[in-house]
Length: 116
Image (cartoon, one colour):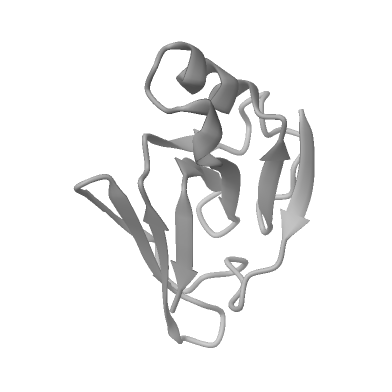
């Protein structure tokens, strides 16, 4: 799996509270307090897939759980295209968002993103 790290406005490392996740009408919101106790919301739009992944699982075992990564040439995105869940021309992205405070990642496939 080829990945590249992504720099968000506010780090997910050492978040002060467990992230709160809400999925509604294919939009995913992840809310947390960052290391300086500021509220942060990551908004993902048109989300056909997301899940929690323990940092011990083999798919992420070589990744640092205090960073965010984009998967390049994603097998998961290819699989979603093959089964007809998404179209090839839609430019979906595949990220792993690490939360070292809970030792987990949120894996998400999405079309749009905003951070507040």
